[in-house]
Image (cartoon, rainbow, N blue to C red; front, side, top):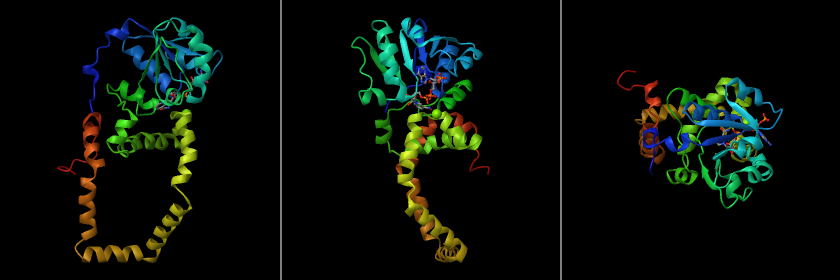
Length: 274
Ligand code: NDP
Ligand code: MG
Protein backbone atom coordinates (compact mmCIF):
# COMPACT_ATOMS: atom_id res chain seq x y z
CA UNK A 1 0.00 0.00 0.00
CA UNK A 2 1.36 3.41 -0.98
CA UNK A 3 0.81 6.12 1.58
CA UNK A 4 1.42 9.73 0.60
CA UNK A 5 2.11 12.47 3.13
CA UNK A 6 1.99 16.27 2.92
CA UNK A 7 5.61 16.36 1.78
CA UNK A 8 4.73 14.17 -1.22
CA UNK A 9 2.02 16.55 -2.39
CA UNK A 10 2.23 19.65 -4.52
CA UNK A 11 -0.51 22.11 -3.63
CA UNK A 12 0.26 24.50 -6.49
CA UNK A 13 -2.21 22.96 -9.00
CA UNK A 14 -5.14 23.51 -6.61
CA UNK A 15 -4.04 26.98 -5.47
CA UNK A 16 -5.03 28.66 -8.73
CA UNK A 17 -8.44 26.94 -8.74
CA UNK A 18 -11.82 27.93 -7.40
CA UNK A 19 -13.01 25.38 -4.84
CA UNK A 20 -16.67 25.10 -3.88
CA UNK A 21 -17.45 23.22 -0.69
CA UNK A 22 -21.13 22.30 -0.60
CA UNK A 23 -22.31 21.94 2.99
CA UNK A 24 -20.84 23.22 6.22
CA UNK A 25 -21.54 20.34 8.57
CA UNK A 26 -19.14 17.89 10.16
CA UNK A 27 -16.92 17.44 7.09
CA UNK A 28 -17.80 20.70 5.31
CA UNK A 29 -16.50 23.04 8.00
CA UNK A 30 -13.25 21.06 8.23
CA UNK A 31 -12.53 20.90 4.49
CA UNK A 32 -13.46 24.56 3.96
CA UNK A 33 -11.30 25.87 6.81
CA UNK A 34 -8.35 23.53 6.18
CA UNK A 35 -8.21 24.31 2.44
CA UNK A 36 -8.63 28.02 3.03
CA UNK A 37 -5.76 28.06 5.55
CA UNK A 38 -3.66 26.08 3.07
CA UNK A 39 -4.00 28.96 0.61
CA UNK A 40 -6.87 27.76 -1.59
CA UNK A 41 -9.76 29.93 -2.75
CA UNK A 42 -12.86 28.50 -1.11
CA UNK A 43 -16.53 29.36 -1.44
CA UNK A 44 -18.98 27.48 0.75
CA UNK A 45 -22.25 26.69 -1.01
CA UNK A 46 -25.35 26.49 1.19
CA UNK A 47 -29.09 26.82 0.93
CA UNK A 48 -30.50 30.20 1.81
CA UNK A 49 -31.60 30.65 5.42
CA UNK A 50 -30.07 27.35 6.57
CA UNK A 51 -28.63 26.98 10.05
CA UNK A 52 -25.00 26.81 8.96
CA UNK A 53 -24.77 30.12 7.01
CA UNK A 54 -23.91 32.08 10.16
CA UNK A 55 -21.18 29.63 11.08
CA UNK A 56 -19.44 30.14 7.72
CA UNK A 57 -19.53 33.90 8.09
CA UNK A 58 -18.29 33.69 11.67
CA UNK A 59 -15.31 31.68 10.41
CA UNK A 60 -14.52 34.45 7.92
CA UNK A 61 -15.19 32.32 4.85
CA UNK A 62 -17.10 33.25 1.71
CA UNK A 63 -20.61 31.85 1.51
CA UNK A 64 -22.95 31.70 -1.50
CA UNK A 65 -26.08 29.94 -2.70
CA UNK A 66 -25.33 26.43 -3.91
CA UNK A 67 -25.92 27.49 -7.55
CA UNK A 68 -23.58 30.47 -7.32
CA UNK A 69 -20.86 28.50 -5.56
CA UNK A 70 -21.03 25.77 -8.21
CA UNK A 71 -21.06 28.13 -11.23
CA UNK A 72 -17.53 29.46 -10.90
CA UNK A 73 -15.94 26.35 -9.41
CA UNK A 74 -13.16 24.19 -10.81
CA UNK A 75 -13.55 21.71 -7.96
CA UNK A 76 -16.89 20.97 -6.33
CA UNK A 77 -16.55 19.05 -3.08
CA UNK A 78 -19.97 17.72 -2.07
CA UNK A 79 -20.12 17.48 1.71
CA UNK A 80 -23.87 17.25 2.19
CA UNK A 81 -25.63 14.39 3.97
CA UNK A 82 -25.51 11.38 1.63
CA UNK A 83 -29.29 11.29 1.42
CA UNK A 84 -29.43 14.90 0.04
CA UNK A 85 -26.64 14.59 -2.50
CA UNK A 86 -28.56 13.10 -5.46
CA UNK A 87 -31.19 15.84 -5.41
CA UNK A 88 -28.70 18.69 -5.03
CA UNK A 89 -26.57 17.16 -7.78
CA UNK A 90 -29.43 17.00 -10.28
CA UNK A 91 -31.04 20.33 -9.36
CA UNK A 92 -27.99 22.50 -8.72
CA UNK A 93 -24.72 20.88 -9.65
CA UNK A 94 -25.34 19.24 -13.03
CA UNK A 95 -27.05 22.33 -14.57
CA UNK A 96 -24.45 24.82 -13.20
CA UNK A 97 -21.07 23.08 -13.13
CA UNK A 98 -18.67 24.35 -15.73
CA UNK A 99 -17.30 22.06 -18.45
CA UNK A 100 -14.52 19.81 -17.21
CA UNK A 101 -14.92 20.67 -13.54
CA UNK A 102 -14.00 18.11 -10.89
CA UNK A 103 -16.64 16.60 -8.67
CA UNK A 104 -15.38 15.39 -5.30
CA UNK A 105 -16.96 13.27 -2.59
CA UNK A 106 -16.03 12.15 0.93
CA UNK A 107 -17.95 8.88 0.62
CA UNK A 108 -18.45 6.41 -2.22
CA UNK A 109 -22.13 5.84 -1.53
CA UNK A 110 -23.79 8.04 -4.17
CA UNK A 111 -21.47 7.10 -7.03
CA UNK A 112 -21.23 3.42 -6.19
CA UNK A 113 -24.99 2.97 -5.95
CA UNK A 114 -25.71 5.07 -9.03
CA UNK A 115 -27.57 7.81 -7.14
CA UNK A 116 -25.39 10.35 -8.90
CA UNK A 117 -24.50 9.67 -12.53
CA UNK A 118 -22.04 12.44 -13.27
CA UNK A 119 -22.06 14.39 -16.50
CA UNK A 120 -19.56 12.85 -18.92
CA UNK A 121 -17.24 15.88 -18.94
CA UNK A 122 -16.79 15.96 -15.16
CA UNK A 123 -13.87 14.31 -13.38
CA UNK A 124 -14.82 12.45 -10.23
CA UNK A 125 -12.54 12.02 -7.24
CA UNK A 126 -12.90 10.93 -3.64
CA UNK A 127 -11.15 12.23 -0.53
CA UNK A 128 -12.73 10.17 2.24
CA UNK A 129 -11.28 10.94 5.67
CA UNK A 130 -11.15 8.02 8.07
CA UNK A 131 -12.28 10.30 10.89
CA UNK A 132 -15.16 12.51 11.94
CA UNK A 133 -15.04 16.00 10.41
CA UNK A 134 -14.29 17.59 13.77
CA UNK A 135 -11.13 15.48 14.00
CA UNK A 136 -10.21 16.37 10.39
CA UNK A 137 -10.25 19.97 11.58
CA UNK A 138 -8.58 19.56 14.98
CA UNK A 139 -5.67 17.46 13.69
CA UNK A 140 -5.07 19.97 10.87
CA UNK A 141 -5.05 22.82 13.43
CA UNK A 142 -2.36 20.94 15.36
CA UNK A 143 -0.22 20.55 12.24
CA UNK A 144 -1.22 16.95 11.53
CA UNK A 145 -3.91 15.20 9.57
CA UNK A 146 -5.97 12.03 9.37
CA UNK A 147 -5.50 9.12 6.97
CA UNK A 148 -7.72 8.83 3.89
CA UNK A 149 -7.78 5.12 3.02
CA UNK A 150 -9.91 3.17 0.61
CA UNK A 151 -12.19 0.72 2.40
CA UNK A 152 -11.04 -2.13 0.21
CA UNK A 153 -7.45 -1.62 1.26
CA UNK A 154 -8.47 -1.36 4.85
CA UNK A 155 -10.38 -4.62 4.54
CA UNK A 156 -7.38 -6.28 2.91
CA UNK A 157 -5.16 -5.05 5.71
CA UNK A 158 -7.47 -6.70 8.23
CA UNK A 159 -10.91 -5.20 8.63
CA UNK A 160 -10.65 -4.57 12.32
CA UNK A 161 -7.69 -2.22 11.93
CA UNK A 162 -10.09 0.55 11.00
CA UNK A 163 -12.34 0.29 14.02
CA UNK A 164 -9.24 -0.18 16.16
CA UNK A 165 -8.04 3.33 15.38
CA UNK A 166 -11.36 5.02 14.76
CA UNK A 167 -12.57 3.61 18.05
CA UNK A 168 -10.68 6.30 19.95
CA UNK A 169 -12.03 9.06 17.74
CA UNK A 170 -15.56 7.88 18.43
CA UNK A 171 -14.96 7.33 22.14
CA UNK A 172 -13.50 10.86 22.42
CA UNK A 173 -16.74 12.28 21.00
CA UNK A 174 -18.87 10.28 23.45
CA UNK A 175 -16.57 11.16 26.36
CA UNK A 176 -16.85 14.86 25.50
CA UNK A 177 -20.61 15.11 25.12
CA UNK A 178 -22.45 11.83 25.16
CA UNK A 179 -23.95 9.81 22.34
CA UNK A 180 -25.75 12.82 20.84
CA UNK A 181 -22.38 14.58 20.47
CA UNK A 182 -21.04 11.59 18.53
CA UNK A 183 -24.12 11.47 16.31
CA UNK A 184 -23.77 15.18 15.57
CA UNK A 185 -20.23 14.65 14.34
CA UNK A 186 -20.74 11.48 12.30
CA UNK A 187 -22.69 11.40 9.04
CA UNK A 188 -26.42 10.57 8.92
CA UNK A 189 -25.29 7.58 6.87
CA UNK A 190 -23.10 6.27 9.71
CA UNK A 191 -25.77 7.11 12.28
CA UNK A 192 -28.42 5.11 10.39
CA UNK A 193 -26.00 2.16 10.33
CA UNK A 194 -25.59 2.55 14.07
CA UNK A 195 -29.33 2.00 14.57
CA UNK A 196 -29.73 -0.83 12.06
CA UNK A 197 -26.47 -2.79 12.49
CA UNK A 198 -25.88 -2.23 16.22
CA UNK A 199 -28.83 -4.31 17.44
CA UNK A 200 -27.79 -7.15 15.10
CA UNK A 201 -24.42 -7.36 16.86
CA UNK A 202 -25.47 -6.70 20.43
CA UNK A 203 -28.37 -9.14 20.60
CA UNK A 204 -30.34 -10.74 23.43
CA UNK A 205 -27.65 -13.49 23.39
CA UNK A 206 -24.92 -10.90 23.97
CA UNK A 207 -26.88 -9.42 26.85
CA UNK A 208 -27.40 -12.90 28.34
CA UNK A 209 -23.69 -13.63 28.04
CA UNK A 210 -22.93 -10.37 29.86
CA UNK A 211 -25.43 -11.26 32.59
CA UNK A 212 -23.69 -14.62 32.97
CA UNK A 213 -20.31 -12.85 33.36
CA UNK A 214 -21.75 -10.65 36.07
CA UNK A 215 -23.19 -13.72 37.82
CA UNK A 216 -19.77 -15.42 37.67
CA UNK A 217 -18.26 -12.40 39.42
CA UNK A 218 -21.00 -12.31 42.06
CA UNK A 219 -20.89 -16.04 42.86
CA UNK A 220 -17.10 -16.20 43.01
CA UNK A 221 -16.94 -18.49 39.94
CA UNK A 222 -14.62 -16.03 38.16
CA UNK A 223 -12.38 -15.70 41.23
CA UNK A 224 -12.10 -19.50 41.49
CA UNK A 225 -11.10 -19.76 37.84
CA UNK A 226 -8.48 -17.00 38.22
CA UNK A 227 -6.95 -18.71 41.25
CA UNK A 228 -6.76 -22.07 39.45
CA UNK A 229 -5.17 -20.34 36.45
CA UNK A 230 -2.48 -18.77 38.61
CA UNK A 231 -1.85 -21.98 40.55
CA UNK A 232 -1.18 -23.70 37.20
CA UNK A 233 1.38 -21.05 36.18
CA UNK A 234 -0.99 -18.80 34.18
CA UNK A 235 -1.06 -20.91 30.98
CA UNK A 236 -4.13 -19.17 29.51
CA UNK A 237 -2.79 -15.71 30.19
CA UNK A 238 0.61 -16.46 28.66
CA UNK A 239 -0.81 -18.21 25.59
CA UNK A 240 -3.43 -15.54 24.92
CA UNK A 241 -0.91 -12.74 25.37
CA UNK A 242 1.32 -14.36 22.74
CA UNK A 243 -1.58 -15.00 20.33
CA UNK A 244 -2.78 -11.41 20.66
CA UNK A 245 0.69 -10.03 19.98
CA UNK A 246 0.89 -12.12 16.81
CA UNK A 247 -2.53 -11.08 15.56
CA UNK A 248 -2.48 -9.07 12.31
CA UNK A 249 -4.43 -6.27 14.02
CA UNK A 250 -1.36 -5.61 16.15
CA UNK A 251 1.15 -5.80 13.30
CA UNK A 252 -0.87 -3.58 10.98
CA UNK A 253 -1.80 -1.34 13.91
CA UNK A 254 1.86 -0.64 14.66
CA UNK A 255 2.43 0.34 11.00
CA UNK A 256 -0.63 2.58 11.02
CA UNK A 257 0.40 4.27 14.29
CA UNK A 258 3.81 5.00 12.80
CA UNK A 259 1.97 7.10 10.19
CA UNK A 260 0.36 9.19 12.93
CA UNK A 261 3.34 10.65 14.80
CA UNK A 262 1.25 12.71 17.23
CA UNK A 263 0.15 9.49 18.95
CA UNK A 264 3.66 8.73 20.17
CA UNK A 265 4.10 12.31 21.39
CA UNK A 266 1.25 11.96 23.88
CA UNK A 267 1.98 8.44 25.07
CA UNK A 268 0.58 7.40 28.43
CA UNK A 269 2.61 4.22 28.54
CA UNK A 270 6.39 4.18 28.30
CA UNK A 271 7.44 0.66 29.26
CA UNK A 272 10.93 1.85 30.22
CA UNK A 273 9.49 4.42 32.60
CA UNK A 274 6.06 3.42 33.88
P1 NDP B 1 -23.66 16.86 7.64
O1 NDP B 1 -24.92 16.15 7.96
O2 NDP B 1 -22.85 17.36 8.79
O3 NDP B 1 -23.99 18.09 6.62
C1 NDP B 1 -24.76 19.13 7.01
C2 NDP B 1 -24.54 20.31 6.06
O4 NDP B 1 -25.19 20.05 4.82
C3 NDP B 1 -25.11 21.56 6.63
O5 NDP B 1 -24.28 22.66 6.29
C4 NDP B 1 -26.46 21.65 5.93
O6 NDP B 1 -26.92 22.97 5.80
C5 NDP B 1 -26.09 21.14 4.56
N1 NDP B 1 -27.24 20.64 3.80
C6 NDP B 1 -28.03 19.58 4.10
N2 NDP B 1 -28.95 19.40 3.14
C7 NDP B 1 -28.74 20.37 2.23
C8 NDP B 1 -29.37 20.73 1.00
N3 NDP B 1 -30.41 20.02 0.53
N4 NDP B 1 -28.89 21.79 0.31
C9 NDP B 1 -27.85 22.50 0.77
N5 NDP B 1 -27.21 22.22 1.93
C10 NDP B 1 -27.65 21.17 2.64
O7 NDP B 1 -22.79 15.97 6.65
P2 NDP B 1 -21.45 15.15 7.03
O8 NDP B 1 -20.31 16.10 7.13
O9 NDP B 1 -21.73 14.20 8.13
O10 NDP B 1 -21.29 14.26 5.68
C11 NDP B 1 -20.84 14.85 4.46
C12 NDP B 1 -20.21 13.78 3.59
O11 NDP B 1 -19.02 13.33 4.20
C13 NDP B 1 -21.09 12.54 3.39
O12 NDP B 1 -20.84 12.06 2.09
C14 NDP B 1 -20.54 11.56 4.42
O13 NDP B 1 -20.77 10.21 4.11
C15 NDP B 1 -19.07 11.91 4.35
N6 NDP B 1 -18.30 11.55 5.54
C16 NDP B 1 -18.70 12.06 6.76
C17 NDP B 1 -17.96 11.78 7.89
C18 NDP B 1 -18.27 12.47 9.18
O14 NDP B 1 -17.41 12.52 10.01
N7 NDP B 1 -19.43 13.04 9.39
C19 NDP B 1 -16.80 10.86 7.84
C20 NDP B 1 -16.40 10.47 6.48
C21 NDP B 1 -17.17 10.78 5.40
P3 NDP B 1 -28.11 23.57 6.71
O15 NDP B 1 -27.44 24.26 7.83
O16 NDP B 1 -28.80 24.48 5.76
O17 NDP B 1 -28.96 22.42 7.15
MG1 MG C 1 -24.45 13.88 12.17
